[in-house]
Image (cartoon, rainbow, N blue to C red; front, side):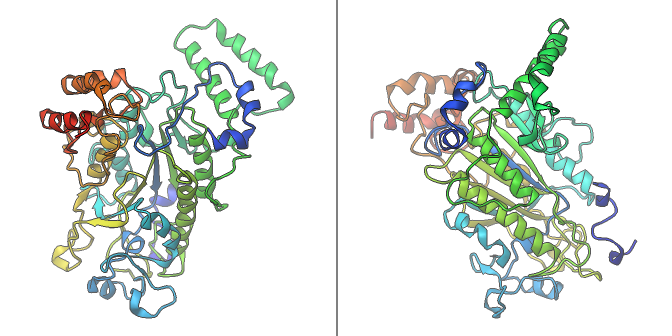
Length: 496
C-alpha cells in the first residue's frame, strides 16, 4: 500500500465540591446521596495534598516537530520544505509563535499560551522511549507499562502507582478511571479502576421507571453468593450510584471555559466534573484518537495535523481554564504519544514513524513557561539511525518525578521496574508546605514526630498519613529523605 492509498499506516488503521455542588443542586444532591458515598475536601492551594493525575495519550505517533517546531534549526526547514511551520519572522499569517528564540508553537496551539505564560505548561522535547521499534502497538504498550521492550509485564505504570500507595481517601470506591471503551494499559493493575467511555451514561440502562426494581433484584441475586463475587457486585453497584450522583450533564465549567464539542473536549469536560465532585478519584486516563498518524497529506498550517493540534489545544485550554480558575486544584496533566515522526517529509507529503517526540506537562506545581530539552540537533550524524530526532530525555524520568513529587509516591522501583530515573526539574517544590508533615498548613512542633517517622520509615509514615505527601520531608529537594533535610526542617520549625 502506498502513502497515497491511506491516511495512517495499515497497522494503526486496525484500531477501529464546592462550585460543582452548587451547580449540581448542592443540598438536594447531598441529602439524596447514599451513606457510603465518600466526601473529600480538596484543599484550597496547589501544595496541600497529592495531585489528581490526568493522563492524555495521543495515539498514532504525534509529530513533535510540528507540535513544537525548532524554529532556530535550519535543517528542519531544509528537510521539510512543505511541512515545516513558518518561522515567526516569515511574515506568514500563520507563522510560529516564538517561545524562546529556538523553539516555537504553531499558531493553532495559541489557545495554550495562557497556560504557558502562567508557568503551568512545560514542553519537553526530544523525549520518548529508548527502543528501536517503530510499531504503534509495541511503543504504546512500552509507554503505558513503563518498561520498554517488555512483552510480559501485565500491569501499567499508573496501575502500579495506585497499587503501591494508600488511597487519598480511605475507603474510596473509585480510584482510577479510563475514559475509554476498554481500560487503558496504563491503568491495568490499579485497585478500584474501571473504564467509563461516557461517565454521564454509566449505569444499568433501560427504563428509568423499573430501575429501582431491577437494582433490588440484582442485590437479592448476589446476596447469597460467595466471595469475591459478592464484593464485586456490591462495588459495581456502589460505583454506579457514585457516578450517577454526579450531575455531568448539568456541569458548569469555571473560569469562562468553553469546551469544544469534540470527543476530547467532551471527555475532558466529564473529567473536570469528576475531579470537582471530590469523590476520591486519583487518576484519569483519556485517549485522543485524532489523525496523529500523518503518513500522507500532513499539512503545515492547514490540513490534518493542524486540525488535530487545534482540537487538542481547544480542549486542553478549556480544561486548564476550568480546573485552575480561582484557587485551582491539585491536578497534573500529562500529554504523551508513542513516538515522534521522521524528520524528512515523504513523497506523500507526510511523515513516517520516527523516534524522539514531545510531551506536555501542565500543573500548578510544574516548572512551566519553558521548553525543556537536551537538544541533539538535526544534522544527519545527530539523528537516531540517521533518520529521526534522537531521544535525550527518557519519558520515565518525567513520569517518575511527577509520581514522587506530585503524586506522593516514593516507590519508583515498583512503578518503573529495573529503571533508575534521573529527575529533570519538571516539578516545583512547594516551599510553603515543605516540612508540614501533618498537612495542617503550618510547620511547627506538631510536625516533629511525623518528620522523624518519615526519616525512619517513610512507607509507614505514608500509610499513617495517606492524604499528606511524605515527600514534604524532602526539604532540600534532592529526591531523598535523609539526614541532609534535618537542618532545614529544624530551621523551619524554629521560624529561622
